[in-house]
Length: 227
Ligand SMILES: C[S@@+](CC[C@H](N)C(=O)[O-])C[C@H]1O[C@@H](n2cnc3c(N)ncnc32)[C@H](O)[C@@H]1O
Image 1: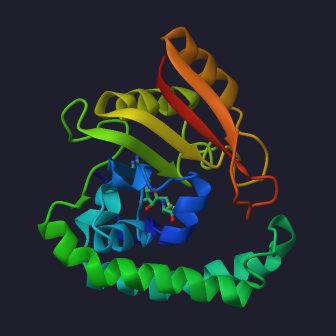
Image 2: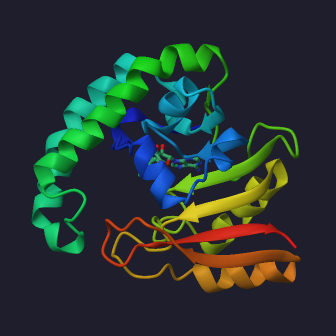
Image 3: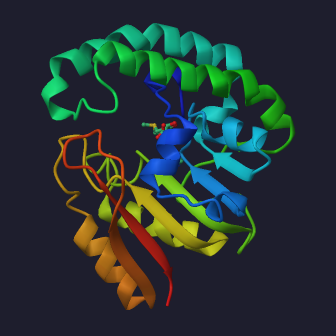
């Protein structure tokens, strides 16, 4: 895969953040869900504990829990430093400080780490990467992308985004993506191309406001489903 641990900066969000980012209802949480690029987020671990049916796919999962834990410890001070320097780019409301954010992220990643080896054996954590997913067509009801598509628009082309979303739509009836902003905090330059192409392919594509805003202005998700 050419995916080496020294290139990874693990950073994972919590179940509560996923619920807010994607406007997940009680009904949504009962569905077979796929998280693309879930990394060390606590979403899969917490939802599985609640009886949910969720699979996460990420290239990070070729590594062991101990390797990922070591990489988190190595990179955490740098991430915190960057956050302190860019603190004005974020909305400090539900999370009030960089230190509190650090604690929330570490707790989410600890939840993931404690669950990872068991979840991997159970097939809930699958090593793989967009734009080619190792799942049969129609396996999931809802596929999510948190802080991967659009956020890394400088590194991932418009064509990659379209291919990734089409692949997510192959394996799932509905796709939701959050945020629509790049790392620079501006709307992704790929959004218009991707939404236009998906509409031409016959999908319903909507931008919906959600009850979550941490990156300033990042309070919208993309919802794609067949018409
Ligand atoms: C910023 S992290 C987001 C983690 C998690 N979704 C969250 O919101 O807390 C981005 C994740 O995308 C994963 N990733 C990178 N390239 C990918 C690809 N082509 N397909 C799937 N995941 C990928 C990385 O390994 C990393 O775990």
